[in-house]
Length: 237
Image 1 (cartoon, one colour):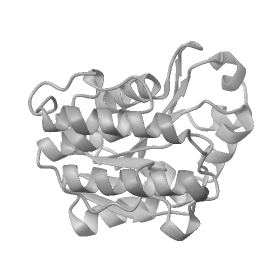
Image 2: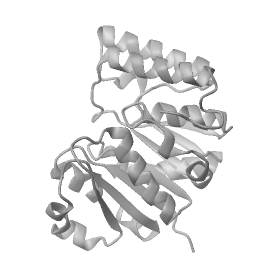
Image 3: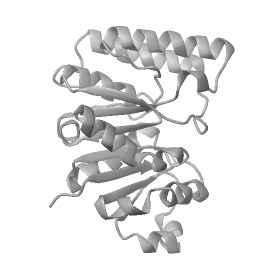
């Protein structure tokens, strides 16, 4: 019988963040977890594998990378391992966003109830960490993303993504961005594939700030490619 959930955790933070993320996963959920893929772009897995916490959970698999790995490439590697393991659902979130660990059951239940293929965990608008010009830029970009992708999302920077099996099998992760635009390209692909996309708002206490100019370039580039049909059959970086 296939397990209910696989988890992908790209880890750019220190070991404390990773340990906390794992410790906050509900204990009663572990029997239903198939594999936990932990991607370490700039750390040696041997440093972590000796920790009692990781020895206690044999389902954890470490993927060693290098310092040149960006967010998108790290996630691609982790989702690739999760795809091979197969499961009904796969959750992906950065180690520093530990509040996501506590809501995994809620996220999966939400997908099951509303029959979703892809679920974005977002910040509540009232909890946006940024203000002033950056907040205005984010609001504008969210509006553009919703308009061009025909979505109704409240945030353009997901705290996590949860994929149903259909999304895991149909989205060509290996052809998407190796950088921070990865999640936006996932949404663009999902729209072209007519996948059912939803959103669930999560606590925002751990969201990091991003450069407004860099965000704008990423979003506008992806939306332009979407309008040109790049994600229709053969997504390109």
